[in-house]
Length: 459
Image (cartoon, rainbow, N blue to C red):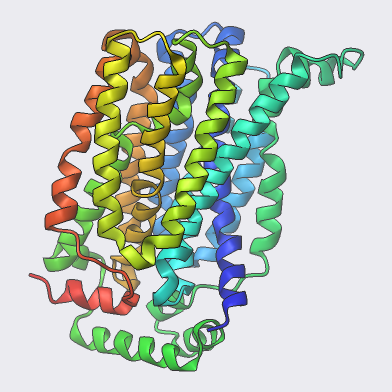
């Protein structure tokens, strides 16, 4: 195995996760600023947050079909372009309607990257370290979230200083009076980097196999995992092809139907637990405890650091402990912390740092379980020929859940209050425990072809 090539390719593909995380989190520092500037009500505020998620749903639906037809690499290049156009467009928008249009474009980029980045990594990764490498994608998401928190706090600090006090109108607007512009526009830089680096990576070897271009797939596999493992994986692939002709209808039959249901339910559960309520509306939740916006953004930075650190734990241990164990412990911690957070809000405990502490526990539990493991599972439990299409269905369900949360949280906070909102999240997360324990197979250490063979034989 040529580790340097494997890690280089995984790093480049994971930049899609960085942009995904940055795009998701950067909006949190702009919500109150955009709301005040455009006089938004609760519904329009929710639309500002969830509009990108509507674009994400569109991108998710397109990603599997386009990725299976044209290749993972080519559609990732499209996503990089969309990220850059969206960021620059948001920065220069002169109306709320234009801002929404560019957020929609960025959302399409997120949708494409959220499927094809982990999918590409899983298809170039050796079986023994696939979990860790795909988890690198989730690490990139959390790191992107953290960088967004830092840049938001940094740009807010600049706007409150006298650095650009004598600047012209455009600079004055972007950095001081309408600082949300530079917060959103700063994503242009990593988007350009992602675009340039994508030009040097090869196509996915599994994508070549799905088109029966075995010679091209073999050359790439040998370069990445070595000749011995490449021959083994190709032998299993050819055996599976002889067992059954896998097509789009296969996903609705036998074991593959079970795999689809597992992926969809777990994907939705990652959103129903309320993680994006903390990512998107964290500053608002912390402001309700009495913190000022600057302090609230500082609290978000701490949340982002914890998110990154515990994702590193998942990367370190996922191929040793397995997917199931991380999920069971993590989901249990998620439910318990959600109940306690709701209780603190209900009792009106006058200690914002106690609340932040349990929010950090919630984020930590998510970061070493649901966060990274879902992308690993979705990228490995479906057959090669229709992996992109099947992953699109599961990820589509994930983003439907994310869109609903993004749109409904302001309403939930107003009508159910914060305590009712967090208790609802805890209740909605409970079914996933049963699914993980009783139905989900352990996939650590298995090649993609071996996992495919498992579902082929499952009735």
